[in-house]
Length: 161
Figure (cartoon, rainbow, N blue to C red):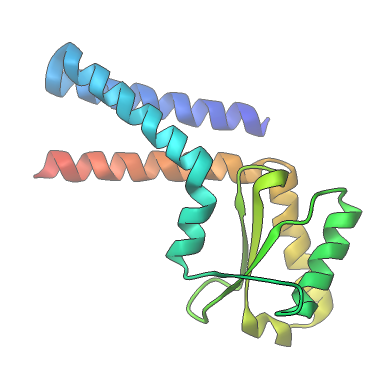
């Protein structure tokens, strides 16, 4: 179902962009808009995790840097039969915990250092929910939606000038 949702969002974005391109620039505008849509989809698919992690100032860590986080994520991914994702620590101004990535093999878990003070059961539940989004391909649909919103916003800014 999530693959269908992702495909629908990407197709809808492409149709909106091509229609706007054609209205603004005729057939050439439609071609340019189509190429732009493909670029947005490609960048969103291949680089969204890195973009989001950089946006929040996440720093990749090793097991010794945050053993409490590593241990919990390792246990959860083992139970879910998932590969171990890369781990990142976030500055205080970022969300408490989130995951990024397009699939299980390209996933990242980011958590603030101060999540260590949370009750372990609560942190485990939050991390399990976030990891399930990767396993069930919910992140891919979210990435496609974010790409669509970003592209429409960019197009609106271009048209507004």
